[in-house]
Length: 458
Image (cartoon, rainbow, N blue to C red; front, side):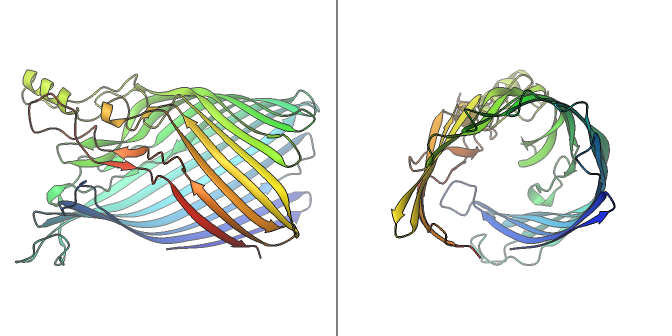
């Protein structure tokens, strides 16, 4: 359940424009998870969140039709987040971690454009961002009452086992510079360098028995990158084509790992990572009634430096434990691929509209995704490898040529490619010394589904 409020206004002050945006977002979320991959109530969990955010932005900008144009502004955001993860086990115990977070964001920013000539522009801007998060980590336990046989029975009140204060502060100044050149009226080339910042935060996952997770906070993620690109209209405007080459370096990349000493997933930081490649998108008006959209990517994404990533899988752990008794086995993922990063993808989105008579228009549209294979969680275990696949979505709609309603039928993933989008196969350790792969549950996509849509436009 979510409630959203937004208000925006512009005022002309001489040649300048003052703009303000005020927003408030509130939501409550409740999820029930059954990740034990069995019909028995071995292990179940809940995800409960209460969120309230208020934001205010103000901008002052100059006219854009002059040699030098500019914009300056300020941004403020405050939010409260109460997030709990209660976990229930068949042994009759429950443990819970709750994070109470109060976050405040303050930013100052500006951007400018200097028109060197009618066809050449220099862009420069920067943002200063300061983030402070304060909170508390509350740990609790509960036990089934006498006679109860399953976690589904009513638990008594949770017993709090500890309160730990949390604090994460970070700030940075993020520049962005760029150059744009109009080759002609239909083709523009550009080059851009920019830096980005993603705030750190708190780990919520509780450990069994109501204990604290091994780490309580994770650091900010920073990135800097270069982009070269082209934006164009070709073939007398019938083809739109955009191309971008990029190279981005990440420092303290935020990732999720499994800690087998406490059996919890936590968010931590990989030392360094890099992504580079080429992306493209566009549309081709084949006829007045048929258009073909297209997009794709070709590149690679790797951990540049990520020693001691997390615990080894079972085969590596057993070999290491025999050779190094009492020493934890960890993996060095430096040089391996990031999870969910295929080397290439291609998407085609055709649309055909036609006259049905009686003032009705029909639309047939689709989306065809082609993807190279990738690993769900990096190059760790064959069970987490996804082979290359294709996905097809189709939609047929009817609406009046000048009306305000639409009726449609659709099919999503009609080839029923139930690709795994999550798996625990890479992380859980076997209890035997036999040579095997890790076993764990997986989360597939929803597969083929069909439906009807009715829309009315006010």
